[in-house]
Amino acid sequence: MTISNTISKEDLESLTRDIWGTMVGLDLVDAVMAGSPEPGISSQVEIQGDTEVALRIDCSLELARKVAARLFDMPEDQVDTDLILDAMSEMANILGGNIKGLWPGAIKLSLPLSWESGKDDPSEVSWVVAQGYDCGDGKMLVRVGENPDAEPAATDKPNTDKPKS
Image (cartoon, rainbow, N blue to C red):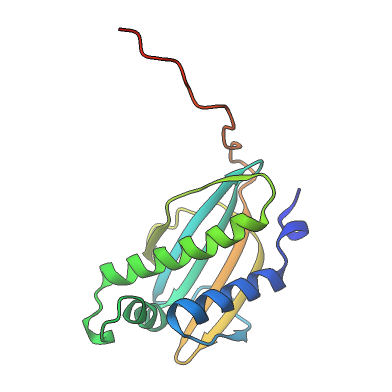
């Protein structure tokens, strides 16, 4: 099963718009983007099951700060980098959970990982579905891809053996 057969660009757009509108009250406008906004924040979660799928959000620092301020109900000038990273991790987690619901065979959602763009990029994913957005002064790129080298998640039953005394 491939990503493009399961998650369409329209699905990604709809979920992203709904979550951004509901969680932080921001309207996103489609944009063509050649790459990740710099400087910015990147957040990623992995959805494990029959195949390993990753969701990545690359967000300009301006937009990431606005998201954090709204999510934590704080003035933008009081939001530090740690709060921005936490907010973008949460947004990736929420969007990843919704994508997990669309992916047959998905059994596990990883903890989100966020970092300042331009630093060590942990991703070795082949991105298949992507959509760029403008939002006020900020920009964002949302991508979904598959890691062909990843091992499928274990689906074994939990160990129910009683400890020996």
